[in-house]
View 1 (cartoon, one colour):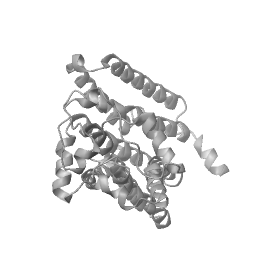
View 2: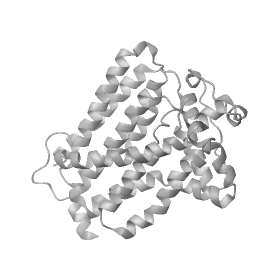
View 3: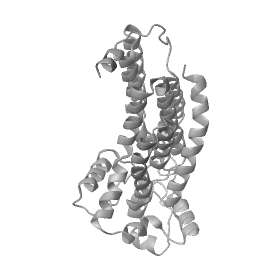
View 4: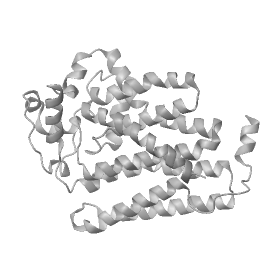
Length: 321
């Protein structure tokens, strides 16, 4: 432990002078979305706030770069990268601010779901497993999403430092890839859509087009399951704090957690992988169980997670030096 703490403050003899690869990815996403804001300025609800938010993020990035240049060591590098990963929480609701200018597409995806499965899995799954234990396990799996990300990032920083920047690059770039899809594909998921059209219509296989409904109404269904459960309350609190009618297809929860599991496998630590595996399985199932996603969202998340990993890992080897 003492050796590790000392390593945190060892000055890097050859520090990178410019931006890290993941910061360039963030900058590209910032610039691209800024162009969208300028071209759609009169249609957006809060364009000034969105622009100033980007200016603040640019300033934070510049500040962290400056700190690292003054004291280039593992600790400041970790803080610099952690800031970018933490800011993903700001970028998520921003997708809603942009895609709300487009008509909602949930009626299309709900119909595809019905045609593929002959039912709405998000409507029936929790009814098939109504017990408090099942509910808590599903909620626990869903709540494990961010802890899994933090765990694997910290693991690489401590035990596989030479691959730490690559790991952070892959995760952050994958997030922005999903966010780009969400900007142009306004799908809210069952919890918002079912609430908007009524469960009666869904049960009858009626999926009306709600057009721009979510521009004005952002209410969603309460999470199904055991309402007195500890993990249930955690999920409800998270929804109340930052959930928006956006980001349903494909499921980034499934996609990013799939990437996390592939990164865990890559470490060679099989014990760690199999410890994380039950949480991953529960997380994937819970996205449908708690009605956050259609089943096709989860399937697309799984496929896109694998594809992004296979693309980004070779790229990271070239750009993270």
